[in-house]
Image (cartoon, rainbow, N blue to C red; front, side, top):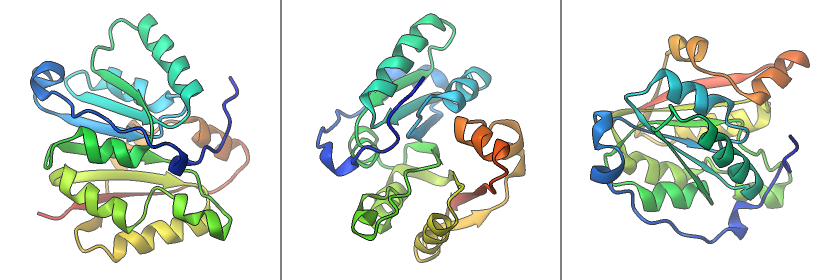
Length: 202
């Protein structure tokens, strides 16, 4: 499957309706997780299958990827705890979720937007973290990874300058659940993967 690598998030102005917690995920013990940029969905399907009591929302900017994964989801009838949407990850976070409602957010290999005049398109920035800190429950966690070192330095800088988050160790998650297409590519090409878990301070 071939999906275009970069799509400008600023070109997507679609907004989202708020999730109905009673209708969608009350039966999942009010455990709510979000993956921003699920791509080819290696992670979200495996994670959802192994965590059937959690409700997992996935948002992806690329229409083709969403259409393919929604069709794939129809063939996996056991996964009734996955909800996929297309659009801008920041708007999804801002619009769909109540404050203090999300347990975990996953951001794996976000687009690096290398050129200086494109860096405003990066997902992880100060505005994003301000909204994220409101939507996460106290003690909620953010799992993030990239193989681009300069992007990793920028991500660490943004999190470090935001006093709402603290970096924590959670090796079990990365060893047990983390799996994605870019992970396989990096291993094959012997590229270093940078990863961390951040926790919202109580």
